[in-house]
Length: 265
Image (cartoon, rainbow, N blue to C red; front, side, top):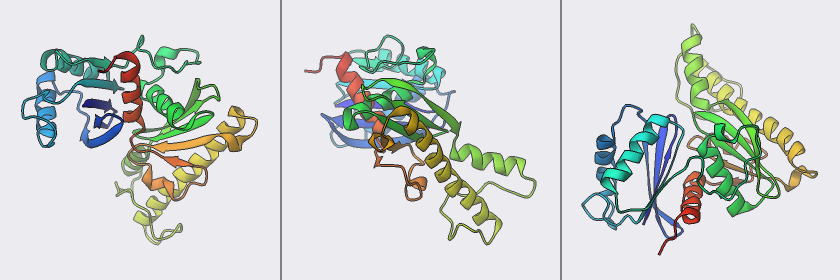
């Protein structure tokens, strides 16, 4: 089976693929201080609970694919693959790895690996033109042309960042649970903040996507809008522009990139 690891700034998502099917997944906090040995113990604990894998680290894993937005974690995962999975083919997404998606930006090396991987999966699953909205630490909007090229995007503060900022900077405000309020007009401070977050971000998504679609295609209706990321469900029901929700888009992209770089038996 293929182990895929998507390291974000806040969370790390792991997925286990049996062929093209994701059969297990985990979400853990991203900690830049974890060493390779600590990561190996964590992986062993998670995968040891799966019935299709053996008790020893690496049993049942025939491939690994990793993308990371945190360089220190990528470094430690590289050591994990070397020390604990030495006989297993591993693809760490970085410059030089074949993705099949041309990157038409001013400096392709500064585009986050996860954003490129999302574009790979979007092209494979839905074709172009497309816009991927990823609700993570930042909310990112990535544009893919009709020819399957990554042409750029938008980066905005994410939902949790905004909640934290309100709690820190607002003298009479506090950190709240991100949840849908009873109504748009809040009857108390918590509901008013929740309304601002949920409906404010839905409005942001609709506004940004609408403008991007006008630039991306002669007919904006031809653009497929895909939502992903852990906080996407908060906005899905309130946005009018999202066509598809694929929570495992990045993991699927990692599987595709692995297959394009390693010949699997």
